[in-house]
Length: 494
Picture 1 (cartoon, rainbow, N blue to C red):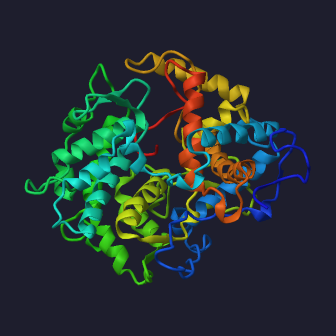
Picture 2: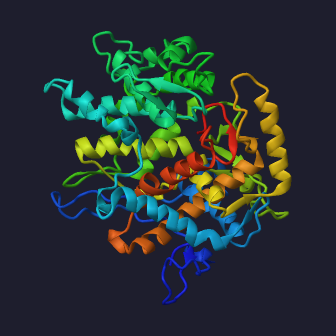
Picture 3: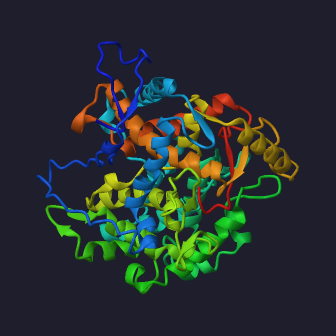
């Protein structure tokens, strides 16, 4: 059984009459992403390392991938009992929400559900039906081997993902290659690959198609604004934050253990392939926690120093949450919920080129969670499963109206607005993680897919929840296409 058990009944799965019940002891990671293995034979099982002990090293635990699902489940359990601090939960909307996600998946992929790619940045590069990554690969001569091709794609994907924070409701990018306009994540993807191809992130004029520390340190906010076509009339939200992230990425790439002497993100490939935990089977098998450590430890300098810390160690995308259970004996770390959204988005995205070009398999990829951001979370609000409580709604509306007085900020289709560290947002993101795990089982059941034939969480994010959340926003707020709750962010979380 998954997070929500299915009542035994002969009624149609579309009847909407089942009431899910919590089986908290059965909370578990969804099945891992599948890769074709027929050409490589049966893959060996890889044991995962144990999570850090939070009573010994709470910072290491909260920075681990294990902690995200383990900590957010406390909030999800309260949501099932309608005991959240900031949201009312109407579980009668559960089946209807799943039915909506199923309709999106069926519309775009039925009956070829196995063809759904895992969630990742690669698909954003292909907006408009243009295979931009494949076209980029085709420009490199046959003398460039697959390992170097993979390094270059890792270079590109790291920068593109880190630039992929919320773009705002009005910004758009005109492709220099096609002349078409793109917005939001796809616009940032097209902009980032065109900047990459121009050599903006490289310090080597003889090799523009790379990212290195010196190249990043040379990128000023003004240069980034030009590359992203951000102006007073076409403002990109969080531009200064994005420029800061790139500059700090340049600092992080000085870690030669992970990124080599030429300080490129792509050199993490060599670290992963040579790591003692990597198995040289019929294909290379890398434990997901090994990739996670590279991203969390190697890229830790990019996160703002103002983030929550324990013992002087910054936790990254982790925040106090009043919904977490507290007793007089509780330790301070127990109130904190980690998400690590951008790091998870990086992990999902970087696995794709390594798998496609070098057939690297990442064991334990099911440890990654659903991404706690405003499209996935907005799905649950716009379907009525979650409703912001009145006092918080009024506070958020007041904040929206104050923000609307600032030039360039949205001022129509009013929705509640909160800072990224607001307790409302932290609770919303935490319950989103748990609900995404749970709705995967419900969606697979409604599709009639079970066991190894079922969608993985990465496929559900790609084909269902993220897309469904966006499309609901477009219908509910057609002028801005904004989520039902807006978040003030500096470009380093979403």
